[in-house]
Amino acid sequence: MKQVLNKKIGVISLGCDKNRVDTEKMLAILSKRHTLTADIDDAEILIVNTCAFLESARKEAVEEILMAIESKKSGTEKVIVSGCLPQLFIDQIKDELVEVDAFLGVSDYNEILAVIDRIYAGERVVCVGEPRGECGKKRVVTTDNYAYLKIADGCSNHCTYCLIPSIRGKYRSVAIADLIEEAKSLGNVSELILVAQDTAKYGCDLGGGITLVTLIQELSKLQNVKAIRLLYCYPENITDDLIDEIANNPKVIKYIDMPLQHADDKVLKLMNRKGTAEGYLRLIEKLRAKVNGIAIRSTFITGFPMESEEAFNNLTEFLLKAKLFNAGFFKYSREEGTPAYKLDGQVPAKIKTQRHKKLYSLQKKVVKENYKKFIGKTIKVLAEGFDCDQLVYYGRAYFNAPDIDGKVYFFSRDEVEYGESYDIEIIKSTGYDLYGERQ
Image (cartoon, rainbow, N blue to C red; front, side):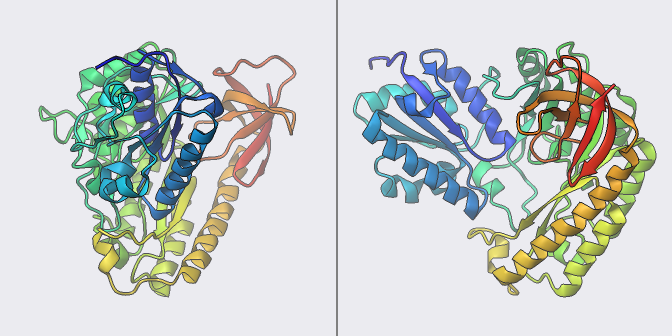
């Protein structure tokens, strides 16, 4: 079959940072034969790398696909859909989205060049296999100053609300040697952010006593990595060894994202989560006792089936006790194919919305209280850009992960180099953001 060469390709990446890593690996494969363009209107081939975790994500994916199809009227030659949506719903969408030229699953990015050859030969391609290993170690990094490292894929926890095991398959850790090679290829990064569906579970399937601590210690030896941040560490897998590593390794940022999802024991059991509210509070106390100044972030779901007023109140009381540095809240999404879909006691949408708003309002007060201790203090801030509306620079402190936490805005009389850290005296806080002046 004739190889197709030097097409202008634009990629729309949707969903989480794990999906972003998949996109970056696909971009590296595409760049071997084709030209990548950030201008979607200029693309001859449009690829939409999709998320399908929630109904809202699927709706967004379909909207982007339809816009890509529409662009065929003004110059786009081919449209390819990849990722989670075709992985789980290929039987439905292949006949509904007839203008799409090819579909690839979550582990089929290595086939992208051959798929392009096939669609230009006149074939409509469905390339959706079983979830399996990573599609390579080379990437085209799409972030500035920081980069994500996906250390595992899939999930074996089987929370009753979650489609991830159906989409991504069972938990699969990436070999340490492969992760080291990938991390080296990223160039100099101010932050290497470790991600997986359950980061703290890393190594459970590798044998030989390999754990997340083992991986962190090896990554810490890399000269191109200034710091390491941990996201998505499920609480039941946060060991004393991991806590000690966070406390004592100077390259590990004193921050942990720990998805708890709820704090009512009955709801947690219905979710098939292994923790309890009391156990979570003990873990939070242990983290704070052993890791000076640690910023703990979490996520919670409200409106889960059987979430009574009492259960919701238990969640709000937990937030007041836990005083988390930050938290994200999601309204329960009833996903067909999950055990929770069939549960009695589904919560009305109006109540979900009310509870969702109340949680954010409560947490905002907690954050405001947390931020008071920084007023008048000088902290390190990683500079990332300039806000043209406010005419100040902005960046992130150790307690700010990209996109999910706030920013630190600061005035500087001297030139600022992005990717470098500066001492910033904090003057005030507004919501989730801090304001200060460079010293």
